[in-house]
Image (tube, rainbow, N blue to C red; front, side, top):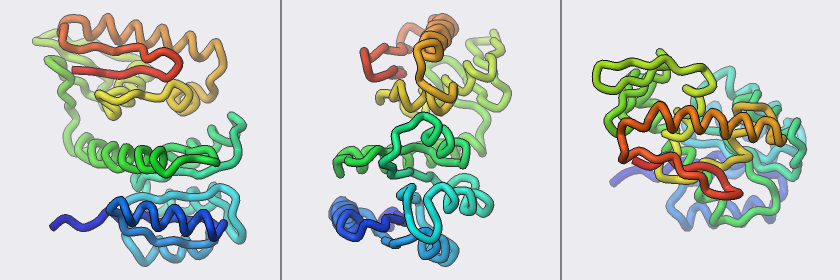
Length: 229
């Protein structure tokens, strides 16, 4: 039998923390609930969680500070921030400190579950990528490290932004890549001009993948994009 995925939850609001813990445990996770950042950091050092769910505003040590300290010891563990803040600069700060995703309060347990499962899946894929420089996307071979896309014997060089965007699409393949999330992660904010810039890069990727007609990058209006193959 496979072990239950371990979640380290840092949430100082006791009633919310209890609800999250019980709900996640009901859905097959093992949850370690800490009520402040210092307690969470101590727990992190003596356990081996698979993912961290961190409230941003906590006593003794806030979520951003906690994430920064954890990233000095572990570069790859997925970090999901729970935040009442919605300012672009706060979200960008979270990504810059090593966060992988964020969820604005109030949120549904269903949405939290989707985000956690997605991050765990992405982390597994990224670990595979670290050991294998080539990714198969239909009949194409994509190398994120070399930033190349190959079809038969033809190799095309990708820009850093094209490579980063294609990797994010691949990590969420057959699922919607949230428009706001990826704009803030790769462009820094989700203003009109960056949104138009992303549309241009999506068009470029479609052209570079057009030789395999089974590959599609679908525009899901108002939500984002989906890579299908």
